[in-house]
Length: 372
Image (cartoon, rainbow, N blue to C red; front, side, top):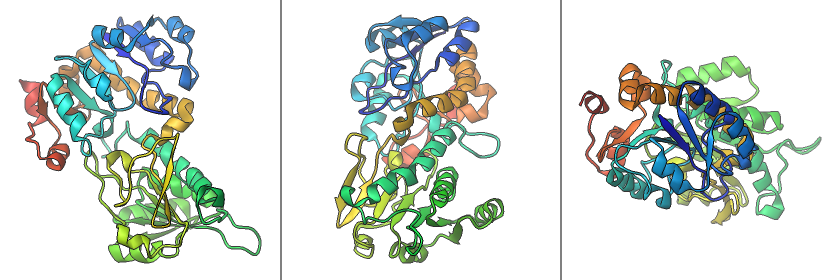
């Protein structure tokens, strides 16, 4: 199979869809790997590293899209990239379609087959291709939140760990999954007073057992959230419904109950955000203020630590990418129901229920598609 990897063009996105190690693995299996020149530079991989791995370097994204059977990326294809997709081509990347009707309609119109990293599952009910970036984003959230808390950036001017005689920042993490757990660990490590909210009692017990009181936890209800945010210096939104739009957990009206200069960090912004006042921002202009509350809503947070993120993502995606190349997408999905769960679009048909529900589009069963 001809596997193509273009340079990411979303603003301030420095990750790359394939590492040289992944390229080497694919070439060793007899596949051809085509890399756009400079695609890996933001993650510290130059053209020579890809050439040494056996890949071929081309000058433009147009050449990659025109030549490749499978396109491997990081972020969802931008409008100019979607125009280059063609019928029968396989796209393997993050998509986040539920809050993005324009992208969804463009992918359907292209006739391509699109498998989304964020909806591929595993035998434990997890999301193995989302987990590495969730870990990175979770660990980044308190770091960027503490920067936003600085007075010069519009925040309350509160130090995360306080100092002797002055209490630490109060941090509320909404969601106790992968993002929330990593966010709570780092925030607690910075010395903050941390409370994690989640609706799963087994998850709350797990957090209590494993972390032994390093941070507090509480069952998540609308009332509990409303009460805790009143005293919070920082709220980290870490709620995920796989493939679907994120629920809105804090309303604009509730901002008036928070401390002026408090910070909202919305890690769920790729899925539309879990605060009513959230809107996607970039690393170039990451924060904005609404009703005295600072918002950090960068849609590709892991792009800030591109080398770590690229290697972590590549480790997770490579086995699936190789299976798709070795077997073709249809056989690979027939053999692996967890990969089949990643199928979102095929030949003008939507194949993921949560996206169809969010956008009001009819959905075809992915199992029926692979049998056709």
